[in-house]
Length: 83
Image 1 (tube, rainbow, N blue to C red):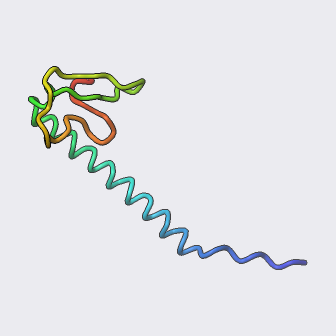
Image 2: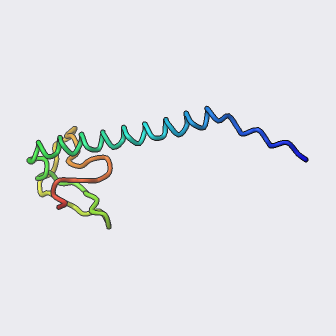
Image 3: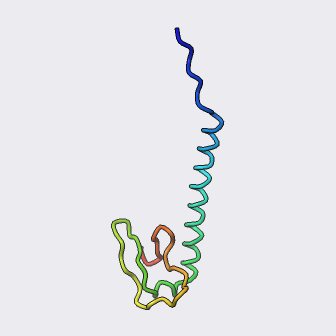
């Protein structure tokens, strides 16, 4: 009769899962923060940008953005014009 194999560092697995969940929660909060900033800056929608609509990238806007301008989409490609 063989003895059961010891599990790999169980506390390390828990920490790993916890850190993964914290990273995911932080990424969600960053995305929501970026969306609020874009909603509060409707003029950014006029700047030319690529936006992700769930199926593919679409070109939005009609003005060339000045150099150094903050993007008019979030990190995941969301823009207020996609409704």
